[in-house]
Amino acid sequence: MSTKTAPLQLPLGIGLRDDARFENYVSGDNALACAQLEQAARGQGEQYIYLWGHPGVGCSHLLQSCCHAADPVKRTAVYLPLSELMHAGPELLDDMDQLQLVCIDNLERIAGQRAWEEALFHLFNRMRAVGHVLILAADRSPRRLGLDLPDLESRLNWGLVFQVRPLDDAAKIVALKSRAAARGLTLGDEVVRYLMHHGSRDMSSLLVTLDRLDRASLSAQRRITVPFVKQVMGW
Image 1 (cartoon, rainbow, N blue to C red):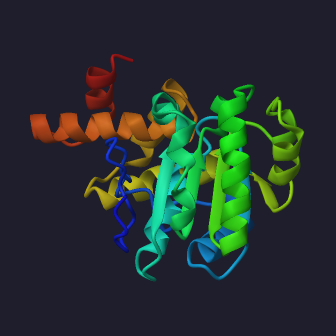
Image 2: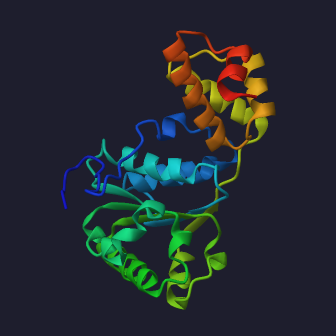
């Protein structure tokens, strides 16, 4: 595996989203978690952090933000979304302790799979032994994962455990406008209200909608207005 100092990309086609950074994550009630994650990513904080939250709250964004934050301080890092990597087998984790930061997403995927659980258990121990940082994320707390390996469940409760909480509507509006502005788009209040009331309200879905509107706006050379949103989204 490459040992470049930039956030690493696996040869399996997994990379980082360029827009998944702490700078454009509206933290809301998650400010403490964000601060601890950024410190850990830079090698200045906790060695182990576990995040959990319902889909759409931004766990994947935060893990990728950690990898981006590791880059300027020349720390080797990798992002491993298990939802896309289960086919690689638990051997995927064998050499990951060589990296200074390992971020593993979708941990719930390995629950009940003994070989994967054992591989993660051993990775945890190796990372701890060499002083490297392991950050994990799942859709539920460690005790609710349904693991077969009691020792792994015990390990998952050793460090900091944060529930990533969803944003309230006011914070979602701020996040949506901020992300639009980063793309060079202006979203009027009427448009934002329409998106909030007619589409899915979780942040991930709102950002997918924004991406679709951005592409449609570029293609049609039109501003994003409520009639344009109706036309593109079929609402």
